[in-house]
Image 1 (cartoon, rainbow, N blue to C red):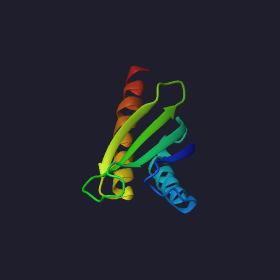
Image 2 (cartoon, rainbow, N blue to C red; image 1 turned 60 degrees about the horizontal axis):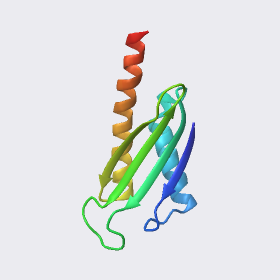
Image 3 (spheres, helix red, strand yellow; image 1 turned 45 degrees about the horizontal axis):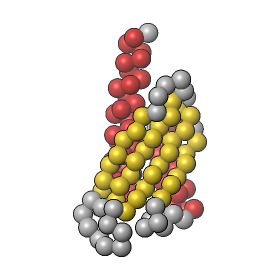
Image 4 (cartoon, rainbow, N blue to C red; image 1 turned 90 degrees about the vertical axis):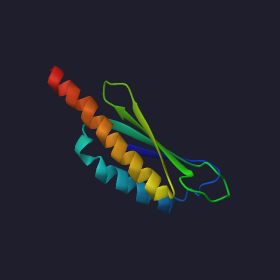
Length: 105
């Protein structure tokens, strides 16, 4: 599973931060590892240099083998809150999508 990390101009996208969040995402999605080909993370700060509640936005797009991509968005007060919330949402979406496929087969 390849994890690609993208940030806007308002988020400092250092390699250390990218590695930390990539490890977190890979660990949380490890049970879907055989079905996922790529995860794209889009992290942005909606208010720029101003601070505010829930101004960090994380969009996760998961590409699955032989299926359409699944995308979710979550907002949080910190980068970590936004990413963790998005990972929880994508896990639910993957459970639903892949669960339906099992039932259909």
